[in-house]
Length: 479
Image (cartoon, rainbow, N blue to C red):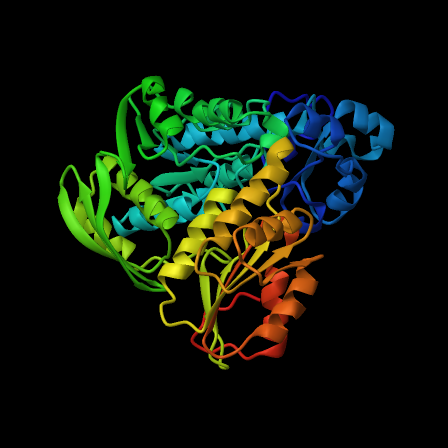
């Protein structure tokens, strides 16, 4: 870790570590606690102000942690002299965590698939891991969306407890121009680098779409010599990254010529999509239980990874038949009263929202009404108002009976929809209010899409419906 241990008990350094922890509330006997503080967060590209975890060192050690990693200046500030023989001093606790993860990765020394993009990273990661597991590989993957400078090394450190994984599938995220993905690639240089898309997400912090493209391209620049770059041919900014590859390139797409593609797409209804998957090895029809063009692209990214490790089209198609959407990413909930809700509350941006609205329209032929509940989309920078109005106008031009815009720029979604002639477009101040409003509207035959950025908490809309109405027992409901 590049650490100082001048006063530490030598016997302690020989002990087995149960786990590495950054949240003192999770401490168990045998753990090592990394005490993070504001300087580390600022140095490593995290936005906002954070608590100084050094105040929890004493309680963590008393609860069974065998050691704590601290900054020397924080040690002096918090008077931890009595615990000096159980402290490891570093200049930067986050950097130390990352260096430790890198050394664990080096000891493990097996392939890494790294995935980035402005949208769809977690779904693509889950699909890719599922495809690779179907080939008999044991796959390490991020928990939830632990894809930043803390979640990534914590995921990799699981290899210190279990080195039997055959391959790692790791999503890499970024939100600032501080070379976040470059740092993650230094921890685990990708053998396969996947770029899904470049969209105006996090533009509040990066300023321009070109800077977002540069930030995402760090995953290709950081790949191993002789590796594989898997690139979305339908996104020109992603396709342009081919020149950065240090090895081969595998492209995927629907609209563009690509090595891995989908054709003859059929959408029979929610949870029932099919398409012909074509890879350089041949073709096979896929029965795909996820919805939307964006999820077909995520499946193609996973298929391209499968192809790059030697799977054929038939094997990949078989694996994709049994995938399930991650929580709050296209979950379908059928209610006993006779209406259906698509819960896509995890995140949102203009392209993803419009894709899901198209999915709603395509998959609900015969519905009494189609209703969209759309939370404001965050981190869109100076263009946020314009982008919300334009997105609302596009929604209003589709076959939608009602739009509820939620919080903040949700007003501009409503404004845009009304510009396009959707009279029944209303604004709700927050997700609780939107949930109550929607619950009063619902009737037999209605189909609803609920989508919003994480900070808007549109999952509360679902909670309000579940308080008032009974979901069918067969539905996979996350509460």
